Every structure is written in C-alpha cells, then in structure tokens.
Length: 560
Ligand SMILES: *[C@@H]1O[C@H](CO)[C@@H](O)[C@H](O)[C@H]1NC(C)=O
Ligand SMILES: *[C@@H]1O[C@H](CO)[C@@H](O)[C@H](O)[C@H]1NC(C)=O
Ligand SMILES: *[C@@H]1O[C@H](CO)[C@@H](O)[C@H](O)[C@H]1NC(C)=O
Image (tube, rainbow, N blue to C red):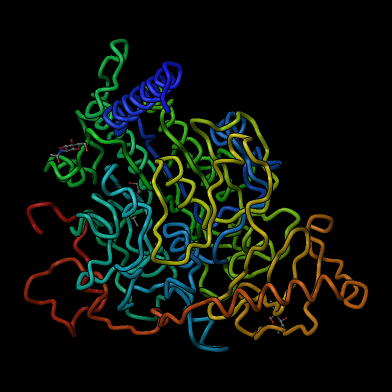
C-alpha cells in the first residue's frame, strides 16, 4: 500500500540514488587523472641505521628525513628475502619469492652460490606473475629506472621496457653492477662487463658508473615534467622550466630521450615510476662532487648522493604541481652488507673494503641472513592521506606495497593467486591501527628459517648472511626471542617456560609452509649465450661471447 508519504520516501530515495550515481559517474570520468602518481624508490643494501631519521650519527639525509617527517616512518618493516633478487620480486608482486620461483632449490654448499640472477641466467621473473606495473597497466603509464636484477634473457622478454614486466620504459642495469668487469666479481669467470641498457638497446658496455646517480636524477626529473605537461596539471604559475634538462641532456641520456620521444609512453596518464638506485651497494662509486662530503667515508657519500638525488626529484614534483597527488614509497632491498669485501674478491678494490658496507644498528648480522639485520630496513611512505609525521610500529613487510598501491587506486586484488601482503592504507590514515599481519615469514631460499608472530620470533635455522663455511645450525625446539624487547636477538627465551608460544609459532609455520604450492626454482639454469653483450657484428657468435668482446662503450643509437 502506497500513501503519499510512501511515495515521497521512494522519490527521495530515488533522488539519492540518482545523485549518488551522478557523483559516481563524474568521479569515474574525472577519476583517472585523479588517481595518484606512484614513485617507488629502492636503495641497494642500505642499512637500518644509515639515514638521519633512523638514527645515523654520521650520515646526513635531509631529504629522506623530510619525507619521513612529513609522511610515515615504519620501524618494524621487513623485506621478502634477505638479498636483492628475491626481495625485489616479492616487492613487485606482493608474493613471497618462494611463490615466484625466485629461490635456490639446492642445499649447502651450492645454495650459497645461487641466490640471485647472474649474467648467464636463463630465466627471470615469470611473465605469469603480476607486477605492480602490470596491475596498473590500464590506469597508469610506467617507467623503471635503475637496477632490475630479476633476469634479462631477451628470448623471454625478461627485461622491463616496451611493456615487458609491466613497464613501458626502462633505463638501467639488467643486474647488479659487481657482476662482471669492471666490477670486482667474478673477475676469473667470463661474465661480460656490465651494460647500461634502455628499452632493449645497449647504451654503454662497459658502463662507467661515476655519473650513474646523476643520470637517474635527470631522467626522473625529465619524466616528471613530461607527465606534468601530459596530465595538464601545470598550474599557470608553473612556468614550463625543464629547459635545463632539455637543452643539453647529459651524455648517456640521448638514447633515453629518443625513446621517450617515440610516443610509447602515454604521458596524459598518472605515472608509476620505479626508481632503483645502485647506491650504496659495493663497489661504491661516486660522482666527483660527492667525494669526501660525509663523515662516513665513501659509504656515507654514496647515501648522501642518493639523498640529494631524491631532493632534486622532490623539487621537480613540487615545481610541476604533481607533489600533492604523488605517493612516494622508499625502502632498502635488504639489510646492510656487513664486511662486504668478505668472500667476493681477494684483490683490493676501491669501494669494497670492510668499511664500505652500512650499519644495521642494533640488529644482528646483515644482508643474506634471516637475523633481523638481514631483513629489517628503513621504510617510508609519503603522500596523499598519510598522517604527517606518524611513526608506525606495526610489523609489516614488502609484500604489503602491492596491495597498498592497489588500494590507493580503488582496484581489487588479483583473485587467482595467493598474495602475502595487506594494504597499509588504514595504518597510514590512522583509520585502523591494528597490526595487519598475524605472522611474518623469513624465508632463505627453499626453507622457512624463521617466523615472527606478534613480539615473538622463532628461528628454525640460523646461518650467517655471507660465510660460505657456515652450513647453518638447526634448532629444535626453535630459538625463541622477544624481538620487541630484545631487538638484538641476543637473549634466547627458555623453551620450557615458553612452550605454548613455541607451539603456536610452530603450528603457524607449518600451516604456512604447507600452503606453499610448488613452483620450480628459476636460478640454476645458466647459458653463456644469454649474457648481455652489445652487438659487435659477425665476430660475436653464441660461443664467442666472452667478455673481451663485449666492449662497445659508448654505443651510439645508430649502431644498434
Ligand atoms: C669514469 O668516468 C670518470 C668521470 O668522467 C673518470 O674520471 C674515470 O676515469 C672513468 N673511469 C673509467 C674506468 O673509465
Ligand atoms: C592515453 O591515456 C588516456 C587515459 O587513459 C586515454 O584516454 C588515451 O586514449 C590514451 N592515449 C593513447 C594514445 O593511447
Ligand atoms: C664462518 O663459519 C664457520 C662455521 O660456522 C666459522 O667457523 C667461521 O669462524 C666463520 N667465519 C667468519 C669470518 O665468521
């Protein structure tokens, strides 16, 4: 039965629906350009205690300190694996490296040798994985600048750029700069000199790293200005002022600029830029202007050069008006490499002495290990909705980055696979400050070495990060620490007194490991034919690709 009153209620409801759907439609129309830009910055082997805002007594990092002071600083963030390749795969996919196939399936002592992709590696991060770039494919335009290290075989489109791996554009190194002459390792093998590449082209081989950081800075600035013009967000007061970048591209960026001019990037979209510095990974390199600036030797200089680069990029974001709608995420790929000269090279190499690694502060051990020093790193998020100056003490992990970014885009998570992360947005806005994870997992290659639930961390195996004489020690019952009260993991708890806690952590670990579907390991197959070697005409064949022949620096665009 409908009376007048009822009718009017219906009309009011209908009106509300109409208004709501109008708002919805107009927000969809306006929506795409309103989605935030994302700048995901990764430092290489930066330790927990190597930024001013994380307590470095000697290294001056005003720009990263500013990001933390205006954004969110996390104190209990761990990466997905204690070394470069697995850490980056889990950061980009939101999944543990064991699910990506990015792990070694061999036991000691072989497992120490295959922990990352090498120049001769056949495989890479599989195409079937969804990277952040893939997930943002329909809304954003993407670029990867810097170190990739997730495989590079051309046959499988392993390198980013040209749409591969979710990135429209790539300028950087296919793997770590020490993997091949003139790096220190492994000089006795036949790895070619490390190449600088751009969208599948060789830019230089070997690559002289000394101006690398400034190239990445300039290229990032350039991209930001291009996007600002494309997004038409330049306010009238923002006079187009990238001439200092346009007029004289610093040497080595010409190919990058030509590639950008080809129109493959859609500059009218929001951007996703993934900027992966090589700083401060050994062997350290610096542009001349940074030598001797810090109180912490070459290592501190390298961190400070990166910080200045980030400051320049922040200025570009502000000058273009894009800063207010850009999410900046900063992390290190793993803990600092303690005594990095150890085991890699016997000859003295500049930038590769025992003092050229960083500091993990009070945390035990470093890069390579599942002690906190290997996996606990600085993590800063700055941008829209982030409560300014907040310190977030919840235990979180690098797999959270993928769902956090998708949450900002209002996009659902892929439903056809297991994700190991959770969105951090409720923590960032303060809407919900509950810990997003019941437990966090510490994998080293094919084995779960440790688990953390709440304040307790149980080690099933402990092993040093880089000591090829250390096969590791198994613990049954597991070695238990309260890592909120004992951040140095130096006071093991009594297993009898904590029997219930141990039972709980063990059952959580068993539940987790039994949920891991088997994915084949991708590290072991090696084939020298896949080592990146700049084109040298007919002299280079599959069998003659030894490093002496891969010297084309500098390659001009016409040559390739
Ligand atoms: C690399 O470039 C710098 C600066 O141009 C130069 O001083 C240095 O000698 C170069 N190194 C090599 C190995 O060519
Ligand atoms: C660029 O992206 C915008 C927004 O998604 C779209 O409308 C436009 O058609 C795209 N341009 C090209 C050339 O693909
Ligand atoms: C490496 O590990 C072995 C076995 O645990 C140990 O004896 C040796 O002292 C370690 N070396 C270093 C440099 O710590």
